[in-house]
Amino acid sequence: MLQIQYLRENTREAIERLQIKNVFDAESRVEEILLLDNNRRELQHKADTIKAESNAIAKEIGKLFKEGKTVEANEKKQRTAELKVQEKELDEQLLLAEKELNEKLISLPNTPHISVPKGKTADDNEVVASFGEIPTLHEGAVPHWDLCSKYDIVDFELGNKITGAGFPVYKGKGAALQRALITFFLNSAVAEGFLEIQPPLMINEASGLGTGQLPDKEGQMYQIPADGFYMIPTAEVPVTNIYRNVIVQETQFPIKHVAYSACFRREAGSYGKDVRGLNRLHQFDKVEIVVVEHPDKSYETLETMKDYVAGLLTKLKLPFRIVKLCGGDISFTSAMTYDFEVWSAAQQKWLEVSSVSNFETFQANRMKLRFKDKDGKTRLAHTLNGSALALPRIVASILENYQTPDGIMIPEVLQPIVGFDKIG
Image 1 (cartoon, rainbow, N blue to C red):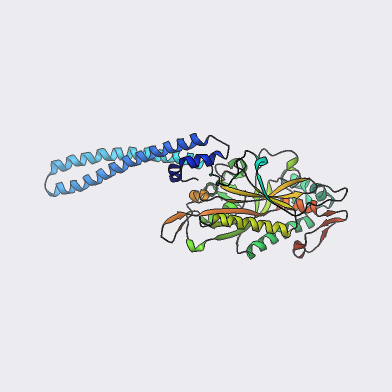
Image 2: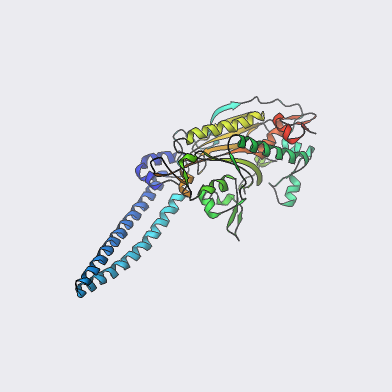
């Protein structure tokens, strides 16, 4: 959530940055919020004035009674009774004004960083780096869904029977490959100083609001209405919410966590060829890295996180590219995002496997995640997170890029973990 002070003091800058997102009339939205804030401040001023007068009269009443001026004291008491009625009315108006202001603020997206390119769709994203050579497959190479069926390692029909489309069943060496990737990603993060967390797979509404899934992505999450819970769309949500309503020490930065979890997304509106096989699922596994950082160092940390994810893909020897998202493609909560896309040799297209984002103070303001600086001033921290990595499309790319006429080779870095060097 953007800070109202920032919108008041940097109105034109906020509007210009929000306009980069191309999703609404930023100027009218910001002006509406500032008008609501002006109204709230006027009500607060009136309420404070009345309370000050009421307190001053209370002191006078005591003095008048001591002096034996009962009539005057009773007149003052009548005035305080009138003020209490006004104070109650103003408090009610103030409560409504604060609620309306908060609802408008919480529905306003984050402002993109100044370096975020302008654009409306993914076609306008900026490719910042490419790594690895795109493999040339043998004649007769097939997409991963055919490989899954051929080697009986992922069963989509069985998942459809048990639950529905988008809930595959991993079997045999397919399940072992999945487990090996999770272990590889977790071990790599721990070696880099991330503290491993095993979070709950369900969150409450406050947690969803804290990291910005609510109200923006409510329709994309699975809900448990009887308990008021939501299935997590990513481990980012419960892990970041560890620090909701917490004041950390400046000396703790950077606070680095890694978590493996199953993730659940309704993916409403998804259809067609892009959802075949492992391309888009309702349940999938992911290893997530989360960092709470000092505001002065968060963009340096974002680059470090970007390099870390690039290192994982390099070790897997998968061809990939790094893309800086444009304003129209960046998420509701993010100030700046790098996407990582791995080449799918059989499908002949790039598949997104990770997003690494800096949210600046957007999540911290919602969660009241603060720190005390060296001068003793309480400030909002910055939060960052990234997929390191999401498994379905990594698995898809390994199956397709590593396929041979005699089977699917296993990336060398995974062989000691998985215990075999080939599927088939």
